[in-house]
Image 1 (cartoon, rainbow, N blue to C red):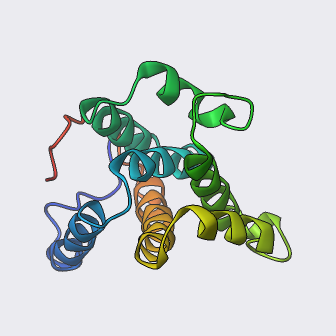
Image 2 (image 1 turned 180 degrees about the vertical axis):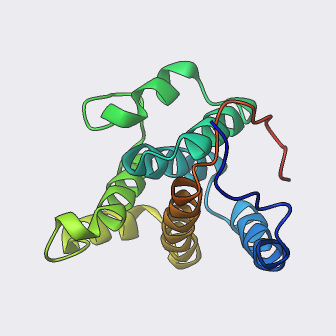
Length: 157
């Protein structure tokens, strides 16, 4: 499959993506644990069906030491016993924040309260922005049909 747009060849994309990539770096350097960041990125990308982001974040998580069992169970995290309570709270917030059109009330007070129990203010802020960021890049990649499979861990760092 060929991408509809080549982001690296387009001058407007180049200008904008410079800032998007900088935002991604800031999020990676935030106090939100790397494992949580990668699990959330993977789950949001699964929900949205963004193959290139699923490819990227599966490989990044594995390179950071994530186990195949946990990676394979992200899509069924509620039934899996391999995630911490903090990770579960982050995954719940990520799902509700991604599926806002499916829930008339948006993100529930319960999901927010659980996340607030496990993450301090700075981590919670990073988590919210990370969820938003992943939804944005998922949509950009889906709209332009960016192909998946060739990503190498660390490629965009």
